[in-house]
Length: 500
Ligand code: SF4
Image (cartoon, rainbow, N blue to C red; front, side, top):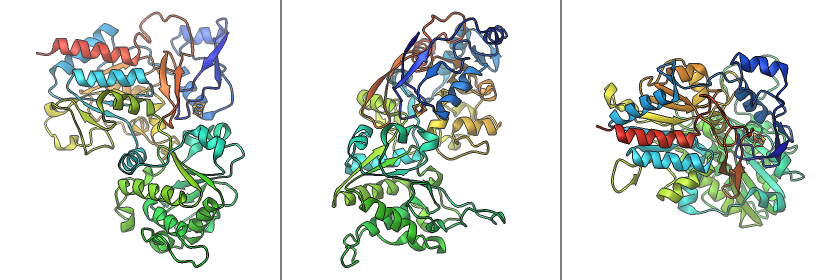
């Protein structure tokens, strides 16, 4: 038996797939399940049918091989009742609570908002430095936006900023077939001597590449000077060479003492050769440069907010001759929209104050201001939403194991506990055990799209899609007792009841 299935693992939310009910007489599967080594609903690698995707396969494989099937309290197995009670007691006792993490569906996002409101907590749903910068600039200045469907129908040139192969592998196949495209990776150059046989260009020599064959270009210039130079190039009068727009500058062309003229000219020429140009921003496009300062040119020290502003100026400039549109792909578009509808704000919020006010600082890493609170007791109890695939959705920067850097990877590679007595972690069977065992309370909840139903929004913030479970069967036993939304609601209810 098959049924339509929408993949929840990246901003594309591919809805052209079908799921297949697992075969129940698989001897190997039965043996593994009997020994509690895998979940029987995800063990088969043909649960999902459709176009190939390595990212989807990796996350399904992680879930199938996950071993965390029940709650933990202080690293020890507990019943759901015990775990919820322990978490609620901590929340009820704490003077300060933070609800944060990833919500890829409307149901979890609504529950997160309601839980934060009930607990007078701070709400910080995950975003990236790139998406925050683009969203802030767009909210302030507006932009000519488009959907992926618009791009597929009308665009004749597509510039992709970031790494679609890591963050949305089927982007080209589903939406960009036949459209000339160019990919730019903004990555600081790795300093130090190059291997003798290295074919890669030396730092600062990305100009050696030409944007002619659609192969990804590694741009080792900070995004801001590069965008300023692109705007300057796009503003040249073709007949006279004079600059029309004084806001741009050729800053990147001699950036850090290297000549990047060819790269900027190639991209400008690529965009100018079309009439309907789309710029697609991946979630972590500029994140490798977020916070850059020490050791970089002063042009790299400017905040990410400026990058969003200059990106919009490029789009504006493209609309002077022909058309230009911006599409940013947000893996948490559903959460952003849900929070906006419910609270009027899409950024971090504190429900501790009345009336509710948006927090204007610390939009990046959750708990960025915690360093100022030295006493243990002052540390907020943190309720974190973290399905196993969420960290990989946030950033395109690669860690030592080749996987994207995010909270999960950072915690996996750094065993130092951040706040072992103050973390209530809602994860899944594939949460790294080292992370789950460090939490005060770990709850392996069900997530829409994997083992629950829900509703999501594609990363271009336009299309609403259903999320369905990979299996239909009624669950029994302790594993997967509650969805993320149900667990949040129970935590809030019990915590409020337990308040002194
Ligand atoms: S491209 Fe993204 S949404 Fe589509 S199948 Fe792959 S991981 Fe899932």
